[in-house]
Length: 338
Image (cartoon, rainbow, N blue to C red; front, top):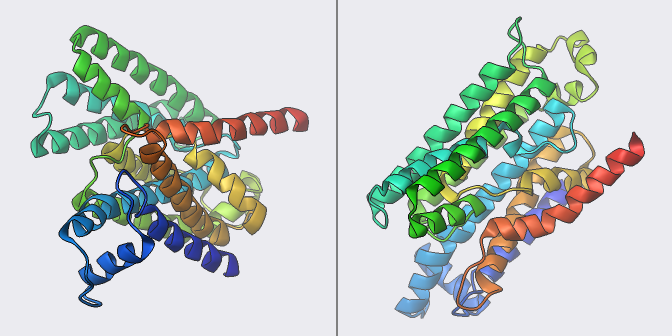
């Protein structure tokens, strides 16, 4: 509990600090005044420009980043336990590739690009593509008895992901539109630039719902971490739990990537970092992963929009820079343990 309270405090401080960072710097006290004024805590003397920058532009973006980081971290923790694979993360299921195909199809068709309708179409196309890839992965992975073996899920996810990647490249090449190609590249690397309050509320709700479902299965995940035989001896329906959690993590990932694009490594590195503090018990691991993932993504997005003056770095590039060395370390550790 102490670790969770400490991390929540770090998250709140991070939100307050990062809201003031950007092309226009805003002092922390002004940030708090804007938020306080909007929450009817007082009539603080802030300018309309400060109010618009903090409340309309930065706050929904920062909260969306926190929600996406939280959701991806919870998905990573669940998948690593389900598959008993240290390298598992949400994109293991090929969902990101499917979402990319759906989004690229909308971009290539030029459906109202630059308008609200185009944004809705892009999100809807990505979500449909993510669900389609999930259906294909589950169809390929399911065994004759209706079971869902982790190894088959991994292999099916990799196969579908590669097919989606090839199909995406083919659509971009055949379209021949350079502007569309740039939009596709930006989407596949992830961005919070266009997020507004409506999308933020959706992302927060999805992340919290995913945490609640995962916590419901926390004891089952603890038992399954010792192997299927142990879990079965304790009366746990291994196949049922695996089906339920695979579908839930896939749907949550689809919700997240359909709004902000493909962002990797968060679901990989956060659960491992948290285990050093919480241990393997999921009742502690999952909430701490949620908050830690939120902190990591908030600062990653802040770096993405602040490091290069006059332009924005895709947030997926920042998370890759952070996560790649950790990925190499995991591979070296796995080789030394073998």
